Figure 1: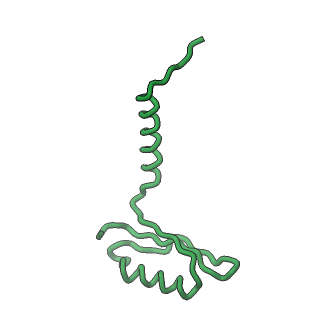
Figure 2: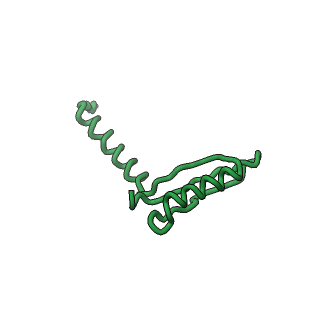
Figure 3: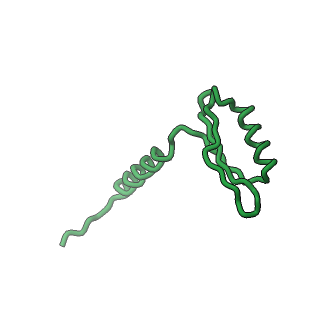
Length: 84
């Protein structure tokens, strides 16, 4: 019966490979930020982002939004870091 022995370098290599895989899957180039705000505050935050990061330069957009049961708005806004 063969027993597989693992050297610390083997474990380290496997963990580094896994970390690279996870990081590359998540890094699609977009910068995202999520908020949960009252309706008026959500509008103001979105305007702030579009003023700070114009769509023409950053491709800023509301990626996801929904109204919660308590009336607050949950949304994710994304942009490219192209002009940072």
